[in-house]
Image (cartoon, rainbow, N blue to C red):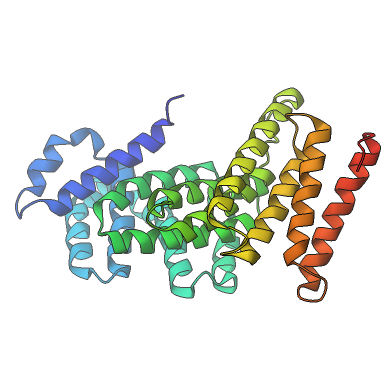
Amino acid sequence: MNRPMREERLEAYLNLIQVLLSSSSGEEMEILQTNQALIDAGLVQTMEAVAAMLAERGDGEAAEWLRNVAAPMVTEMGNSSSTPSVVKQIPESPLQFLTEVLQATADSNGDRKVVYPLLQANLAQLNEKLAEILHSWAMTILPQVEPQEAKFIAATIGGFSNLMAQFPLGDKAKNLEIAITGYEIVVTVFTREASPNEWATTQNNLGNAYRNRIQDDLADEDRWAVRADHLERAIACYEQALQIYTRKAFPQDWAMTQNNLGNAYRDRIQGDRAGNLERAIACYKQALEIYTREASPDEWATIQNNLALASENCEASNVPI
């Protein structure tokens, strides 16, 4: 399926802006004339958002230059009767909101007391379009920055994704779509080879998001099939995480992921029901070898409850325990 046109358009805007920022002095007018088809309110909004991001990163000179390049377009559009609200729209762009919330996430080290009020004040921005913009922006910016900056951006996106996955307000399904998009971006930077710990953490988080993913907009039959696929993806993510999170090297992370894997197998739709439940119970029992009642009473109680649910499902399905 082709990506939505708005995502392709945003990618084109970002690419043009990067060309402008990389150009020699005096070349900007020729570049804009060559790309007349992209000059519209959306480009102006995107230029303002990128300028704000540059300013927040401490590159005020580049931010001011980019705003100066955009200024004649803002003036021309502001004088046009067909686009009277262009200037007013600039601060409201989804990309502007994205840069603001990522900056807040980075500055506060992912503190929900800081980020959640910003999300609550912009619930209308938390939708599929924001997920598309996050993907386009990241996939355009990350290859063009230094490796250390790419890691910083990816870590910020990961923190933002964690917050979105747990955000209690708005549309839970849309929040999870944004989180999934973020996690999928993160693993392109924190790869298994270069950053195994961060990769495993993100795989576990991605597994949780897939397991909890919601598709209320589908018919019942389609929703069942999609749910089955999501659970398979979750299982694959957990199993990949466990390739790094071994019991010997990372016992707590190993136990946590075993519990998550047990939840996915308990709910699994594909495969043999008895086999899935047996695998779930085995995962819970392994997790309980690390999360003991004495050392980790809260985690122990949670996993004991999960184990009880799986055992009840076995009894209901006449599966021997």
